[in-house]
Image (cartoon, rainbow, N blue to C red; front, side):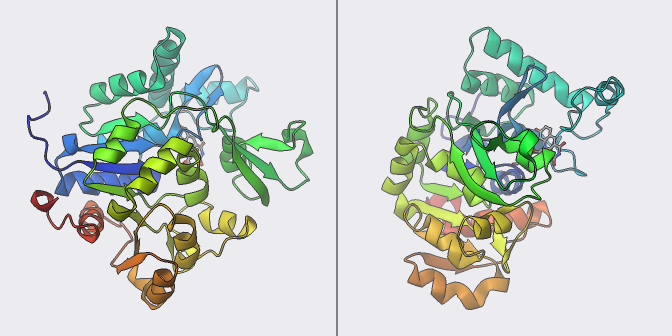
Length: 332
Ligand code: FO1
């Protein structure tokens, strides 16, 4: 179905994986989906078995299609694992869980990229086929792989530069090793994908999803032109803290913040986001820290920020929109 003529106020969301996917699932309950653009992290992308895998794009796409695996929070629901089982029996690399259904997406993407299509074109094709109405844009069509420097002890995994790829850290080592540094290779050369800068500049509201600020949002803001576009919209930009009561809701964000010298709290999140976002949404559990967040130069909104249900996610999305003057879509 073609998008409506007047899709309503435009909203841009900087998105990582699971937390962003849930937020977007809530946002489309309070906003016209065609008016939403999700700019998605590609620092997690990697090639395995010759297949180009884009975990965050797929997590967001599957969630908006109603197909996300509810047990894992990644991959497809009603999944089977026969290919992976065969690979394991053959002694192949089976540390990364590619389900049989999910493999079809990676095969399609890999084939289209080999034919010369860009990642943003392939993403649009896949989204259309999964019936996703939100516009999904990879932050860049150029690679920006996240590289992680870890402590010694797993020397066989590290390259000559002492680094490993993000998925080797996150899945291969179950993010259970100390991280010394993170960098986004190629960020100085990578160009924002077509539509990314316009989506940010034209949006009535820019939402930074409750994703890992270092390894999900960080790769996107490491593109100078993306960072500058968001800074230009600082007053309309609202970040949602992924840290609640001093810990990440999911994944290694809290631990990574400590290891890289940041305070693992909403105040630490505010210090990271203050240059780009005017407002930070924090959970009620952190209400006492609201003045400290404001001391960092951000307005602070306290609201339930844990998304147990799609209704919670819709309320959080509405609170984020309201925080930047979009009390209801018609007001944006
Ligand atoms: N995460 C895991 O913890 N283990 C896996 O085996 C795994 C496989 C996987 C396959 C496809 C995909 O799109 C995502 C997958 N993820 C897996 C999630 C992914 O590694 C991370 O959640 C993101 O990269 C962090 O946002």
